[in-house]
Length: 400
Image 1 (tube, rainbow, N blue to C red):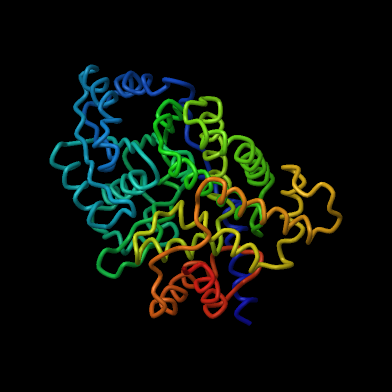
Image 2 (spheres, rainbow, N blue to C red):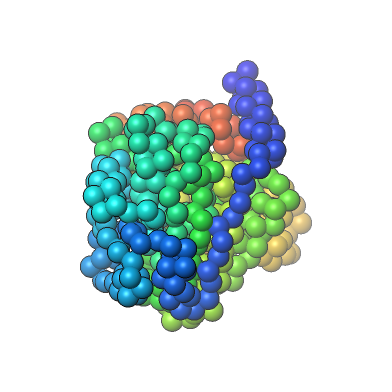
């Protein structure tokens, strides 16, 4: 009965989402050095006070400073919030919100990976709903009022946050990680400038790239696809298999960098509409409790969850294997699916990503699995519905 309830819920959600008029993708500003176009656009649209949200790593390298200078040269005030943590917290949002208010800002620029984007979305939600706390906006469509202009500028190629309706935040008091999902959180503009990813360390290139692959695969194998999400997922998987390891091996390969940005955007668009699955639910629990970086967690967890799905994903993974020309000499869907999973493991190994995660405490596993099950069920249209005890087995498998 529980599984039936989940499937009925998912069908109702898919029907509803297929008929809402609010789906959109951000307007794109793309190409090498396209970041330089943003200040003039802000000026033409009449913005005079903006806040740029980033993180300490980017701030220490000064990657955002040229943009801040260009914005100020256009006569626009630009204040910087640079304290976003790797798994952004509610405290980050509230601190940034205070800075936003104190400086009379009217627009948000998220500069960095998924963390600054999630933090900026959280600020936008609080501006739109000043009387509601972040906790009360958890879940689906709890904001429902326009947020300030949000421009997303990814400096990694993986999170897809520049195109999604989600902000994933951590409650620093409970260590629980959860999502705010609302159409108003989709950024108005996304700047895809591959030059910004040139200096990424190889391990960040690897884990964020596998994060994008996780988005594309989970969207593709799920049960809430549309023609468009299938096309976006397939395009993203092709781009990732062709370009990720090139970008990892040579950070100056700008064609590979540009293609990975496209892949990240497309994968983000796919899972925004088709949802993710248990890989993300497990990764979110680990990020909230231990601060494990999301891309790393997804990269490690992905093959374990795909194996746990068993026969429910043989056909879809075999299709992906054919698309990226893996296991061409194999005949059965099961063999092709296993070859696809094996290639994910091999990619991780070639890029120095471990096959297990450190720091997961055995005493925490029951609690972590409970959180993952609560996040995923009944919302995520996964190929195979798993309860807490089945998810616990995966935690034991991924734990070093």
